[in-house]
Image 1 (spheres, one colour):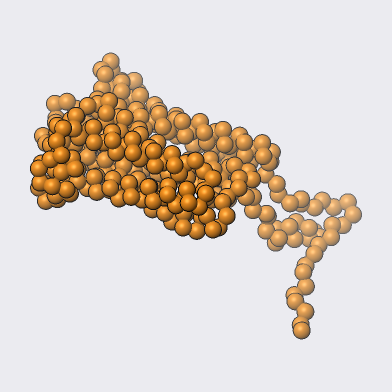
Image 2 (cartoon, helix red, strand yellow):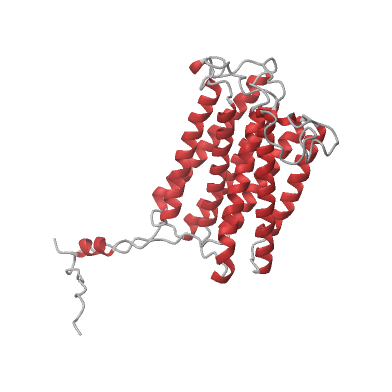
Length: 361
């Protein structure tokens, strides 16, 4: 039996300085500070999404300038730093201020992570990714205004907002020192189920954003007749839901707008199956997080609100409520998945760095 390679050790000479193993400055205190900051950022992002929904239902998307107005409409508002006293411009400008607040908070998170939490690699990388998402979201917002609120851009803008929100929840979970995870027997099946449910919830929300994007081009004098929101009919009739214009369940091929509405419904059906199965498996496996049964309850409420939306026709309060309840459902499903993951742990400094530090000069 041959001996293994000798382990290289280094001894500090008397009177010499030797680098100590790197420990995150402040330790648990810095993680607690980061968690508080992540919580504030989550709250600000929720408010931003709410204001975005108000922008949509109030037809204020182009309140700061028409399509093709260049910098006059974005980043400026009506050609200036402060909007004129019109309701549409004020609502749109408020949305931009809220987005700026979220951007500042995420920049603050990145500063804290890079300065004090370097050994926590997931936290550092996730925070940098959040910063990239914010910059991409700002650029996409400007493009959406410049292109006159095209349907695809509206949906993409909403998708990025949801992805950012989900990432913030994961970062918040990663900063919980010593958080226990369920045993492998519990998470083996539950992890892929929760991941699938999260993907389907996100797809349903994005499809709903696409439905909303077909309704108006941002101003009350540019409606798009027959928007996808009412493309399957309105009123209290099974012909409109679960049917579509009296042609039955998921009757694709009637028109482009009806197909957009039916695609949203299809994702909703798949989401319902995935979330309910996820909640059932979590109950059978005794998953400790209450997010799993809460997701099932929120799903039922969201479907009921969606049905009321179809039957009642366009109603601003219902549309915003549907968006925000969907956002809460997405958040809870992401948090349920995060509860199955361990919190981030500091990575020790590579041995090579310590050896170099201890070598004689």
